[in-house]
Length: 125
Image (cartoon, rainbow, N blue to C red):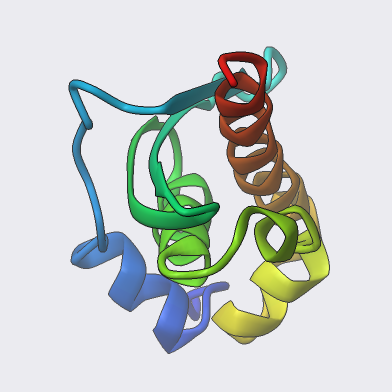
């Protein structure tokens, strides 16, 4: 019987994603996708006093795409915009324990979605 290529933490975020949903009056929205694998991520942020007070996501994709979306929202909630800009794909992978090399691009998508939401927020200021 084949073993699961994902860590327990990845499977927890996939089975019970944190912060799933949409923020209707979001201050910033990031939309990213990967044409090769078909993953699409929407990430919504609310900002007050330069801090991300709420963050939600809607991801259409694989186990890794959903898990990385979930964990990036946990990492971004409650931190400043400057701190959020410093989050990297490596910090996402580390928080999840690891990802199979073929799924590493999902961590990049999650960070790109957050950064796109921040860019959208900043463009409105």
